Length: 162
Image 1: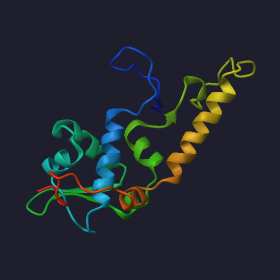
Image 2: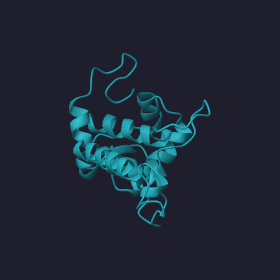
Image 3: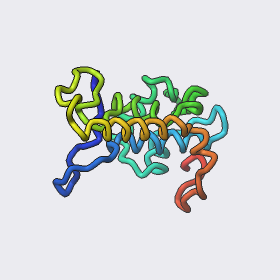
């Protein structure tokens, strides 16, 4: 099982604790789709514009969200992407993990191999508490609640992206 470690290198070369770009785009897409009326479908170019994401990259994110059964996709004249009820009810942890796999603040918390330093490392309980707090926050926020709290739509963005 792949884990996401929030300690990848940043563009400056320093260690950085931040979400992957794919997970960020996934959250943007889910919130955007949740603001749409039920059964509305949005085409890839409109989603890319609404989320400020490159179409080719966003396409891969949408495939992962579809595999996770958070959104549906349909080809053809009445095609596009739509959020499913499960997607509206999903919490941020579910959205992020549908893209990146399990969240893990540090390698010593990955749940697989036991950390040999755990019993004496003073940092381990700090990382464990921080990870638990982060996961608790992510689990307390749903896609629907984020969509309900969304600010005004950007001037270049209409509700259906056209």
